[in-house]
Image (cartoon, rainbow, N blue to C red; front, side, top):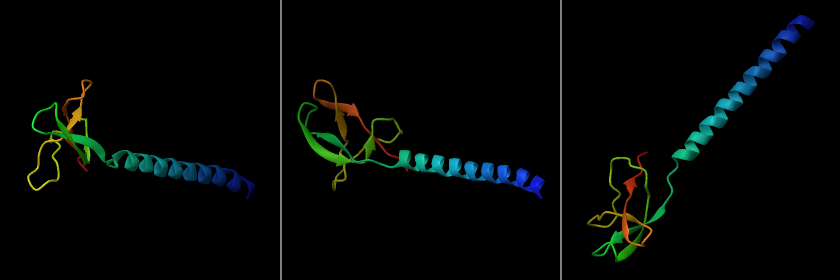
Length: 94
């Protein structure tokens, strides 16, 4: 009886620890994929004159340009060091 307990308890503890580690990792991955609304800018009409727009975009290149949600969508940009809206933003892919 003691031999069975000595074998089963460590196996059970290892199984529970493994399950906890896997579920924690999945939660971190889901959190990283969450989209975050950021402030972008629409050129009006030049990069020196920008209108603010809240969008779900990222500076990481996903292959799809970030567009505004207006009736006629316009490209949304991020401001650069000289305060001009000329840095590309990209659509967040889910």
